[in-house]
Length: 129
Length: 308
Image (cartoon, rainbow over all chains, first blue to last red; front, side, top):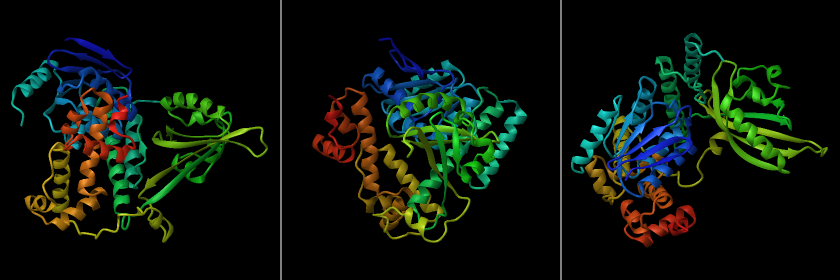
């Protein structure tokens, strides 16, 4: 059931096993952007809980209200989360986010997309905690 | 604006100096590059935001003993967006002399992204006879730092009647100076529900209460044990847990639980087609009526109204 969607902040690709979100270049992610990003993700997922691959390599800034929103409202319908990063900037952003917000599903950051996908696969296969 | 390492390191130093002084309302323009200096700027901005948030929050939750100091920024603009007046605090905060501000277009002070927003908002505001709007704007300081804040923009017609003006103002928090006696101490007190007994919390207690907070967030779909049992489980007593939580987070454990459940439920109701029953179940409400009632109490309308 491959499907895609696009808004001004991100591109969404839905495959059989996961949802792939690619953040676009040059956007400051503030609360309003975060709300749109989450809304559209949930719309694409149609109520299903799934693993999320988040390509944040082009992100340069996420404000605190946006980080808090992404950690609470934005963690709904997520089975596992892998950040696809490009150090050093997005490495700092993802480590900071994961270090200051508690998420109830498996999370990790990767510089290699295949590794990120295998992490997500493993986390679906392992039984729920 | 220059964007080399020397310039960036200077701005980082300036920002750290402001933080050391207790001024957490500045931030740095993020660099478009992906290098070590850029990552340091991103990190510094995020650390600064976290400190600022915890500081303001604690200020309200424990208004009795946290020194707080308000800084008001006010600018008066004419209909073309030229600055006619800037209060002294604005000048010193932006590290600019009055003569560098007065008579200049406001756009000179705004960051690049804010200029676009300003161009849009400003025309819209002036169309109305009188208007109030809250707009997030970024002002740049003489040192290359940024003050990002929601500004109140009020447009009005002058007494002479023919021209319009814009009042642009906001309030920032600083730890720089303690309150004077009287006024502000009272002004910041949350009016009701704050009279709970003060508990002295050790580092260990604070850690324990944070654990309880995290536990609640991670188990929204489950019922909380009774406070007495929860306290026992965490190796503390009910009194400390109850009032300590309130002191740290400014609300009771059960109100916090309901609030977090509703936040999630609202998002699911708005953006998915899951049944209300499923949503109620996912967010820990026992039944639809229970869920609807709590939802209506908080948002003023039942969840079903978001579906039409």
